[in-house]
Length: 124
Image (cartoon, rainbow, N blue to C red; front, side, top):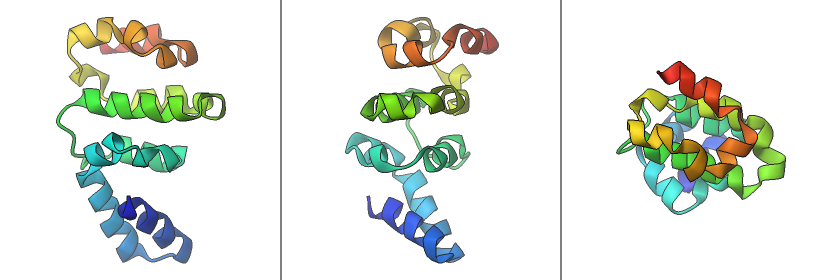
């Protein structure tokens, strides 16, 4: 959680070295940040930077999808406008076929905020 705070602070005071180091820690401990709910307070821009990073460490892309869905669910009325852009950053081709087929049922928040079918068609 501290890494997200320091990342934000570094951007406010324009300290590039601190920003870089805090970002690296956030990317390294992404799963823990998600697991303990620390990603809920980040803004859409910061979450986008995390999700699209090639340096993001996650055991699988399903965890990334779960984090995005949880972030959206935390404040759906205020965040649904970011759903499609965030979902496009998730590496959907890395998800198992079974997960892709069950995406609308498993993640209703995504099905109700995003036109999922075009995204899923792009994966095929």
